[in-house]
Image 1 (cartoon, protein in one colour):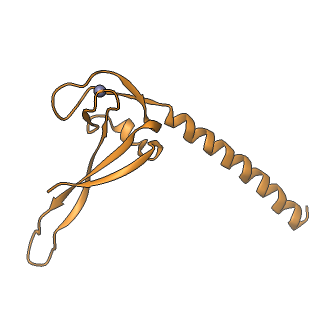
Image 2 (cartoon, protein in one colour):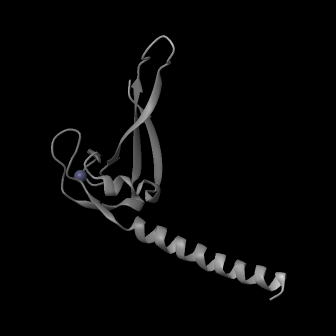
Image 3 (cartoon, helix red, strand yellow):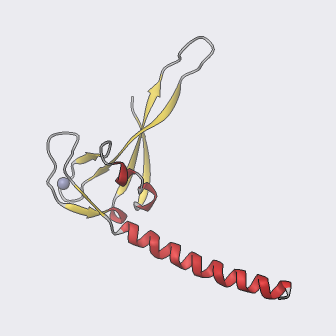
Length: 113
Ligand SMILES: [Zn+2]
């Protein structure tokens, strides 16, 4: 096989792979999460597709440890606002959903005071 033929075949495979990755991304986005564990009280129990939700990535402040180490921010749990009842849900006990962070419609970074 000539180099240009090999490169053409590689491009075809890459195009197929990209199309499959896009389908996979959409399929992940159709996974649903229930509103069950809100910050204040119980959730409404309704389910939403993650592709319709904003993933809220919390960060918390770590104070300086000694005179040589400065303070910094570190990522905490993920959260989302239920579009049905408006309650903010915590995802600390739903690691499989947190793993799908990149399949939410967007990611919002928040920093605790
Ligand atoms: Zn809800």
